[in-house]
Length: 213
Image (cartoon, rainbow, N blue to C red; front, top):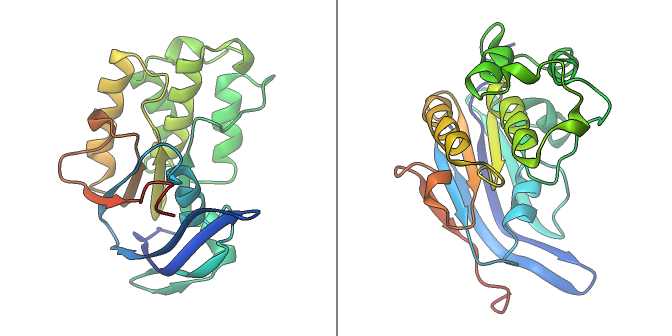
């Protein structure tokens, strides 16, 4: 099944943990095939907002819906149509890098045949195919997260702080792959105002500061 770019709409959306609102009364739309950057101060809820967009957590208030040109997507079907990367995501520490890729491909398709392994080479990790995940540096693990997110066929890709722990070579590689990705699907970047994390064409969503919430 070829996945179509996803559109997301939300109204009066809010998330709170206990009595504290992370954000609230947010309304908006992300059009299918668009490139979005979510900005905000530390603590404004960018990562939490990203989790709601991929249906990883439920909102505390408001409504959110996902759809494609073929119709509405049920919330239970969202996870199989999105790809997501965030610095807090972990891998099975005792797997080899190539095992992580092959395990992922047992459940999801890549944009192109051998696509994830091609990205492994272009990212500079080709020499680490047999490396155990726990031996990788933080920067190498971040590249692996991005390989899985950017190389997986998806109607929506969420990249949370994608340049976290990347060196200059990694940032250049990421930028080149991002240009290719935005021509294929809906791409949302949650950024701490690092301009290298998104393209100049990105449409901005600004979350209010924590004090405003």
